[in-house]
Image (cartoon, rainbow over all chains, first blue to last red; front, side, top):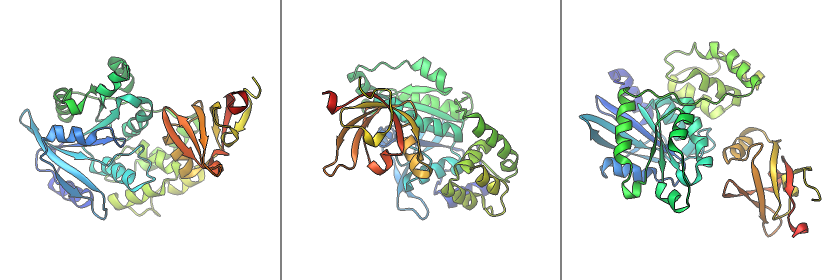
Amino acid sequence: MILSAEKKKSRKDHIGLSEAKNQFSIALAGNPNVGKSTIFNALTGLHQHTGNWPGKTVDNAQGDFQYRQKSFIIIDLPGTYSLLAHTVEEQIARDFLCFANPDVTVVVLDATCLERNLNLALQVFEITPKVIVCLNLMDEAQKKDLVIDLPSLEHELGVPVIATSARQGEGLKELREKIYQVATGSLQTRPRQIVYSSDVEEAVRDLLPHVETIANNPLSPRWIALRLLDGDGSFLDSLSNYLSIDRDLSPGWEESKCAH
Amino acid sequence: MKGAGKIDPLADLSPGSVCQIVSLELSGLLRRRILDMGIVPGTIIRCIRRGPSGDPTAYLVRETLIALRNEDATQILVKRLSNGEENV
């Protein structure tokens, strides 16, 4: 996706992301200690410099790499277990994924405790369809005699799944290639969406028409509706801030409170 | 087995006992946090040990040790699968 100058400026102001023209932006998300930074360093060859988020003390590392005559900027997000914003780190990661609209999000998972890690992947799937799952620490998983059925996992998740051992440099070539394919749109992804209970789905359906009227909205209306149902105040603050909408006037908010 | 299949608050479990989550009677951010940690209905959870003053208590969930305040653990309802100390 190539952005207009105007949109680019607002992205820089809000997110602190300073990508050059014709550069694809890649976000690295994942639980803490899954090797995101190792992957970041391996992809960028240690060309990173740290960028600062406006108003935040938490740094996010940015670096770039070239692949097949394309330029990529990669953003190493803070490690989080969730995106439902209890902590500053979660809020930063969520706001980046929601409002910086990266061309590809790589969710890095710890292959040794997949069950716990998949929660974050499913949350990311609700925000953006352009996701690649990177199963890191495959060497550790092998030591624990864990066998992971990659084709089945890929089928279940609906996005490419790449196995890596970043410390050993294994799987990075394939990861680069998949990033390229998803960024350029030559590979389409259809991440699995969670279907909630019929009550929740019904409330989402009721909210969608209201959410869809929000102007300049880069976000999935479904994601917004779900957060409204959560009564997630921190997300509504970010939404108002990034999209410059007056929360008191935005339709659906009062109704969502009733539904909640 | 005595007590197996009974619905109890998680806080009532003694170290060594294993149970399955039935429901979370929590709300708001705490509920969200508990769910994010993988404590959802159906999850198997093992009570490991209590803190020195009986609070908090450490539980093993999906191969991860998590400490919960008893105050919060009383609001998590579980089905006992096997009992701890009294059976050991």
